[in-house]
Image 1 (cartoon, rainbow, N blue to C red):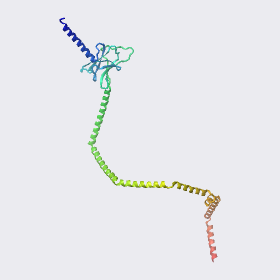
Image 2 (tube, one colour; image 1 turned 90 degrees about the vertical axis):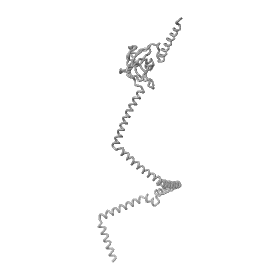
Image 3 (cartoon, rainbow, N blue to C red; image 1 turned 90 degrees about the horizontal axis):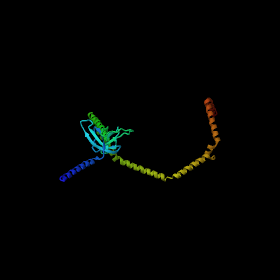
Image 4 (cartoon, rainbow, N blue to C red; image 1 turned 180 degrees about the vertical axis):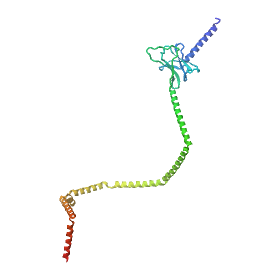
Length: 301
C-alpha cells in the first residue's frame, strides 16, 4: 500500500482527462459514443462556415461539420469534413451544398441525396461533389450592388450633362431666364395686389347691389298674381275661340260663310280677266277714253 496515494492521483487524473475530453466534444455537439460516417467536400470559399455547423438532409439535422482544413496555395482552398449518423448511407450522386442557415447569415451544409432504385453507396471518408447555394442575403446584396452600379452610372451621366451645359453657357442663360420670369411674376403680383385693394371692393359692392335688385325682382315675381293672370289669359282665349266658332257675329260670318268666299273668288277672277284684256287690247280702252272726253266737251258748248 506504499504507492496507494500515487495510484489514486493517477486514476483521478485519467478520469479528469476523460471528462474534459468528453465535455469538450459534448459542447461541440459530437457524441463520441456514437459511430459516424465522414465525408469531405472541397470549396473555394466557405462564406463564413464554421466547425460544429449543422448538416441537413431535406431539412432534417443528421450531423455537423467536424473539421475545416485550408490550404491557401490551392484554388480550392477549403476541405470540409462532415460527420453524419452511421445509420445513414449516402448513395452515389449525392452532393454537399453550402447554404444559408437563417436570416442572420449563418452557414450550414445540406446534403442532396438522389432517389435511385438500386443505389451504390459512397464509402465513409470519400470526397463528394460540393456546391454553393446563393442565399437570400446574397441575392439582396447582388441586386443592391447592381442597382448601386446603375445609379452611379446615372449620376455620372447627369454630372457629365451638367458640366456640358455649364461649359456651353446654357446654365447662365437659364438663370437669366429664371430671373426675368421672377421679375415678371413680381410685376404680376403687384398688379394683382392693386386689383385686390382698389378694384375688388367696387366689384363686391356692385355684386351686392345686383344681388339686392335680383332679390327685389324675385319678391315682385312672388307677390304677383300669377294665377289670376293665367285665369284672365284663359278667359281671353275662350272668348276668341267662341268668336271664331260662332256664325252669328261679323267675324264668324266672314270665317264661316262660304258664299262670301265664292263672291270674292269670282270678283278676283273678273279682275284678272279685265287685267288680261287690258294688256291684250290697250287701244280699245284708250279710244273709249278719248271719245268719251270729246262728247263731254261738245255738251258743254
